[in-house]
Length: 144
Image 1 (spheres, one colour):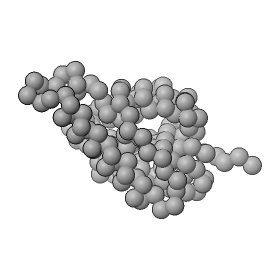
Image 2 (image 1 turned 180 degrees about the vertical axis):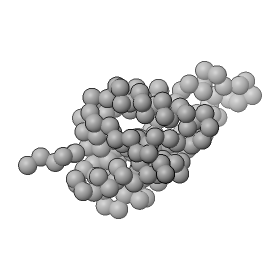
Image 3 (image 1 turned 45 degrees about the horizontal axis):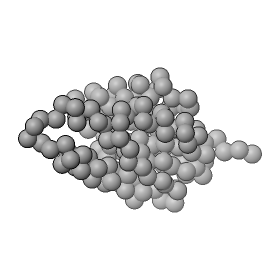
């Protein structure tokens, strides 16, 4: 008998608003005895519009550190679920769906919103893009 979901991708930005999606992905993985890919994508868009006083290397390093914290946070609450972490960069929806296809992911779990303000708006549009682009099932978890 095959598992319902063998590989689950959880997209995380490390924010509180994203925690319900992370927790739901882990819950499903626990029930299905699945592997979780905790993915943080460094959106390269800010690098094209970064102000001169902020060095691109500094910005990238800050985002890299944020990504490490976000995926490690998933590992900390995994409670027995096998978690593989990745920090990738590019256009988030494209990177997430391409990773899912290459790694035969059965389910992508993403939050309906993330950080705040413009970032929240962008995450919503990222979730929508993932739904359109993905070859597998997508679960969008709404934050309370």
